[in-house]
Length: 202
Image 1 (cartoon, rainbow, N blue to C red):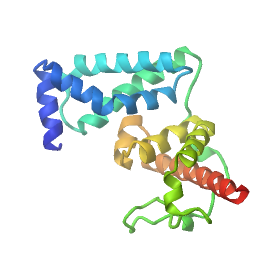
Image 2 (image 1 turned 180 degrees about the horizontal axis):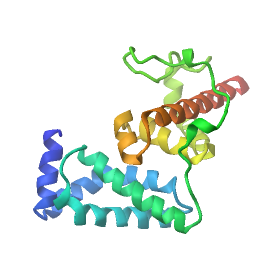
Image 3 (image 1 turned 90 degrees about the horizontal axis):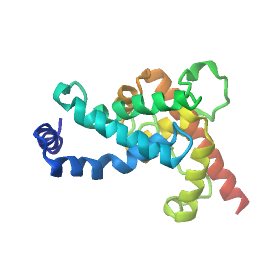
Image 4 (image 1 turned 90 degrees about the vertical axis):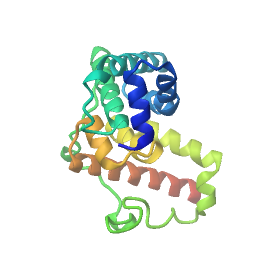
């Protein structure tokens, strides 16, 4: 665990409000984005996040450090969000392998030996890299993520928006590496196709 996380963990265990506030600042916005993928409204997502923080405070004494502090927090969040989603009659199926969805050619993404595995080998045709960062393009991507099946939206949000690595996603969501990889690939494929359609229509 990185030293900063150890300091925050020690502070949290000691009941230090500053450590708790720092963790909320660090992870709160991402927790809300992830919770919103499970439940129907922002208000309910905010309740889920509050419940998760209560779970963190109540459970920190039993945290053994088998995963990173961040992964542990998001595992609590995912469990709280799943429970709330079931009460709302919503579920997120993670069995990605039973859906025969078309996907783009895997060669269009970087391989495991590359510096950024899973990222596009090249930006969508006709879209310079600097345009990928423009607000209009980012808004398009956010809108397309909302259209994805929930499990794909959740995995791509955690990986590509929040910067989790694959092990963190698997541990936080309690899914296999294979499922995580398939869900991420399908989500990235759809987002790339949407970006290429956007460029071609311009």
